[in-house]
Image (cartoon, rainbow, N blue to C red; front, top):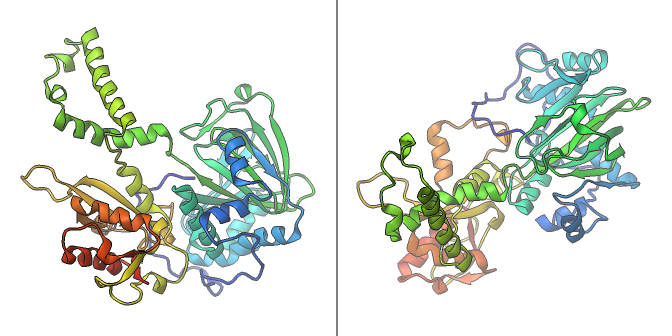
Length: 471
């Protein structure tokens, strides 16, 4: 899953240097019946890995070892092929694709990756020439931006994992390999869409790797798994698993989809996120943390065993408060990064508008799109001369743009700040917001706020953002 780029992306329009075929609507109706269940995020994941059970998968395979699910069902194979196929490329080239941003053309030669990208816009004829004559792999980045069913799948998976879910499609001609042996910093699910692909997996040299890296043959050793994926099959392997894949002889081409998640979502990442606020809060109540450090420490003159003991004592006291539940854990950056970069809810834009009657004190209400909103407690963002004040932010992904999911941000700086700001409430509203978050339905009058005006004002703000509906 590529890291989110901050580069600006151009508006998509028709190309002036070639006559494109008519554009397809990004919201299309599937002709093939889906074997997946979209009733809930949990049901979607369960149907994706069937016949494996979810509990068994997470206890035996997740972050532990690879899993190959062989499927002999022709309906599943047909559905997988409908998600993306080689024949889709000519029409997709009319979307003004660009090399590197949308498509990479690569081939592994003598254990090294050779990039065969052209300059500028991707043309169907040149892409086909690279595929046929150069036996190059076409790597299509984040196809959920164009393929409605992939949007539908990945949006539900982001709700299930509580983290970003990216995807890439790899189309490789026979007797060819696109990428050299490497490992990734994401959990990987491979769906074989067309043809067959031969995979070789190796034991990690860096278990649960936190970054992408190539790996040398002398360090890899022998494969732990040699797998032939056929259309309709699924392969999972944990981050850090060394892998390489090629299309065997006699197979015209292979098309597979990678679904990837859990990038930078470790305990270590969470600690990096919450530590600043934890230390800041404790410093306000613990005078020893506000005492000056030894003179000359920055110059290397004040270091002593006492320095380590003092720091350890402060961390130990903080750990005790966390364990006892007397210190709140506030994740802010990770929540904001996820919610402002994830996919919007699947469906037409009009479904995301305020719905039904305006809420009043006597109404029963419930939250909409719970899986698409998060709450953070953090400092008020307006800079003032007053002491730091904590407030509650309600952030949501209803206004996110599917077209830039996982490939960059085309918002200007002001728009980006507006998207990430969300709704802001006084800290006194936190309990009422948690009531709404935890309840299936709730009477406005039962909200734990001091006045009727505050109760109505809260639900009206949420309704105006399409986050609440009157039952």
